[in-house]
Length: 394
Image (cartoon, rainbow, N blue to C red; front, side):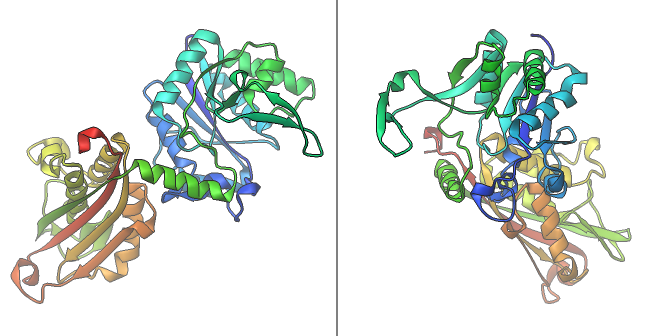
């Protein structure tokens, strides 16, 4: 079953049971669209080569903002059923001839890289495998009147999750056969594979790999994730750049027309530099100069977007999240107020958080010091992050 490994993220449903006017896969979850963690996780997994989202045609704008900056394939449009949407994804991938395909519901945003690795290994050994959890509760069968008809043997029962993993060719063939037979009623790919005569095995799932179905699921999912991120840290950052030649300054990722520019080895974005140091400080992972030394010519003129994305990725690499970013800019000119909202939006986009989690403030120094004399700009930043609590953190 050699070949590239692909992941199809199914996100074409309407999610009506979750309530609200936005499909559940695009609703906010811990400050970001619910679909984004799955896309980001698959895109970053070292063994997954292709990530293909399947969306509803009406959700194109929602999808584009949700997936901004992620290394995934352009989405394809799904069908009227989950089965039709998966088939659309498989047909779109067929020219690339993957060896293994993972089918994952966007409504399960907390699947881990370890679960994906287990899925890949299971598909490689059995050809068709699904993650499953044992049932701890007693299970009863009931009739239409709500009367118990049997007590089932829970030892033989499992709760099935996604991502479900298959040899690509056999799953595509099974979907094509089901279409030809007029069968569009399968609720997951394992059921379709079973109908097609494939032997499906199970591998260990994850209790945290919850599915968002109802409105209350969002509250429970957020609470569950925040309980895991119990190590709350705060870092601070300070940066200063002097004015030099130029016709604009770059602050918070936004170019602002000005009579002078800022001197610096990179683009001298004093605001983003302070934020980078604040995030790295919260992580206790050095400072911006340690990771991007000004003596290194590759950073000459570099966009500070890259530095902030690096710091954000360091948080994600440790399984954490950014809770809040607070930035204060000190200068006599240019005026920051007219650009405040654009800066907040840009910083939020670079950090992968909601704009309500970014504060940008500005003040003068009342004519005092180098900023008061108009010689440069200073920035002060604070970052609050949440990391998983481990014994090493104690």
